[in-house]
Every structure is written in C-alpha cells, then in structure tokens.
Image 1 (spheres, rainbow, N blue to C red):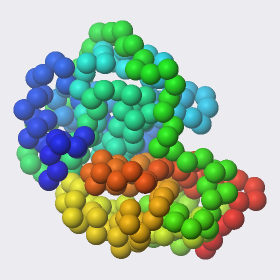
Image 2 (cartoon, rainbow, N blue to C red; image 1 turned 90 degrees about the horizontal axis):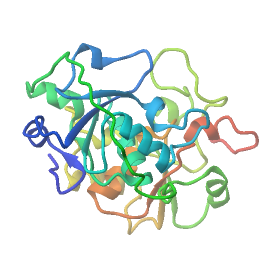
Image 3 (cartoon, helix red, strand yellow; image 1 turned 45 degrees about the vertical axis):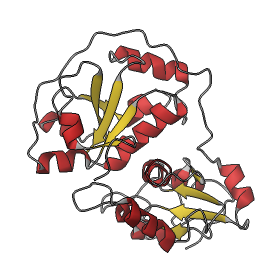
Length: 284
C-alpha cells in the first residue's frame, strides 16, 4: 500500500484524522441516480456528484479557479483544509484530485487508497449521519486554470503518428475493440461511433489495481506501463484517454504521482468527443 509520500493515503492515515477539523472527506458520486453515500459513508464525509462540482454548469469544461473557490467555500473548505477524496469507483476520486489540486491549485488534496471498498473490508467506521458546515471565504489559488496536463482534440489529431508519441486507451476491452461505447450491459451511449483512436494501445485501467481497489506497488505499476511501451525510456510523450477522462486521469495519476514521470497527459474530451466529431479517424 502506497503511503502519504504521494497524494495517495492509507485507511490508517485517514482514520487517525477523522476528528481533525482541518481535514475534509469528500465522497464522489459517480452516477446521478446511484448514491452509495445514502447507504453509509465515512464519518464526516460530504457527497459531491462529480458533474455538479467538477464541471462548469453550462459548458463542457472544467471550473475556473474562481468558480472552484466558490464551490469549496460553500462547503466550508478553506485553502488550509486538507481534502481527501474517495468513491465507490476509484477513478472518480482521482479525477477530483486532478481537477481541484492540479488545474485549480488547491494546496493539499489527497486520494484514499482502496477508496470505499478497502475501507469497508478493513471494518473501518461508517455512518448515515450527514454533516453540515458553515460557508467560508476561499481565495482562488491562481488566476487561470492550469491546463498543462491536458491535450485537446486538434492537437492530438495533428500529432497522430508522430514518432515518440504513445496514445493509451484506458477503457474496457469491449470499448477498445468497438463492441460498445459505454461499459456494462445497459443502454449503450456516449458517442456516435464505436472504436478507438487510430494507433491507440490498450492499457485497461483495472490492471493498475489490486482486487481490493488499492493501487499495485510502484514496481508492478511500472511493469504494466512498460508492457504497452509507455515508460519514459520507451516514449517521449504519452496521451491517455477513455470515455469521459476519469479512467484516463487514473493512468495520469499513477504515472506522474506514484511513479514520478512527467511525460503523460490526458485527452479529457476522450471518446465522447472523438467518437462523435465529424471527420475524425476511427480504428476498429
């Protein structure tokens, strides 16, 4: 289990700090109609549906630092608060870290290793109590959002086939080969076409996890990236994508925050944008 030398923290670390007023736990809800929070959550945790807080309210875009500051302040979070994200699906917690800490500069954001699954397997406390917090003033930590870890559609299209570039597809096999657009067995939606970005290599995101949803050891994680030719001595630049960029942000987090690499970015438009845009090439 990776400890707090990275933004990833253990259950022991968090449980010891549940009564700390400077630590705020946030459960990221991953589907609008699925609230695991209501069935029990980590004591003191609040519930955020990811689209409500981590996207702009109208545009398909991330919040600006000013908007993110307003949202943090509404939940009683100041720039001095240590924020710990978790979710029933780990990639959503990591996505929240990416948006708040990297793009908007929150000074101390963490992700719970193993998220809700490992916490419950360890028999740690859960509650139905919903906490409330008084709003506070949160000063934006920067003037503009930092988009340096993102890749945009036009740039990726122009770079396809460039020597040294590796495109990683973090989706399930059924999505990668073009059988489905959305994982699972329900209504298939999220893009107009099935398939993948031409030349993309498959690194299914679950390969990075143990069965208990903790991340694998750094040595094992490096082996996974090397198996698809995405280590720094194998590729000059890596661009990760999935359907909506949650799983892609997991690939980025693992490579940059756990392994310490700096050559991985996220195409956050991912297949939702690429698979619906007129004229973009598709491979199946």
